[in-house]
Image (cartoon, rainbow, N blue to C red; front, side, top):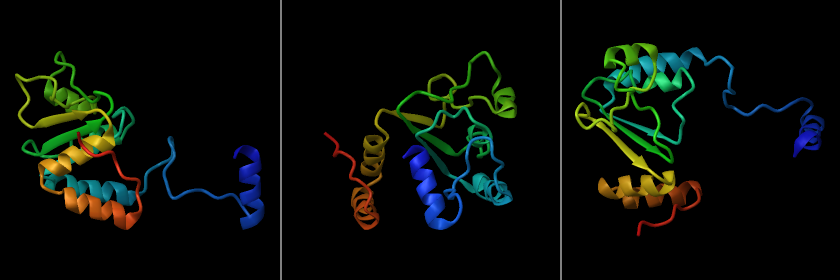
Length: 150
């Protein structure tokens, strides 16, 4: 770890190693925007997992689905809520919080499953009858098993 770790990788591979991810502050590839523009308008359920919903352009993506798309936030913390003083159209345009799960008077499609993301994903899979599929995928890809539901 630290300087020793990256120096060992540099020496072993002849240069620095960068993972296949985008770091904060780096530009996103054109493919990201192409696929977002193709996929989001066709989305019937958008599942957002483990995020602060505060970094653009990702924070704005929840606003790029049709008005009848169900949006499910699975997160430890309650995030992405629209301030009720800001009109919905303005919140969407600004890319600020637009999720309505905390506003029963205006919410028609948003759900927040708060707590452990692993446990909430298991709960959602169980609600849809996908528990066996989820367990098979976890076993196949070697991911750690989330704790079972109580």
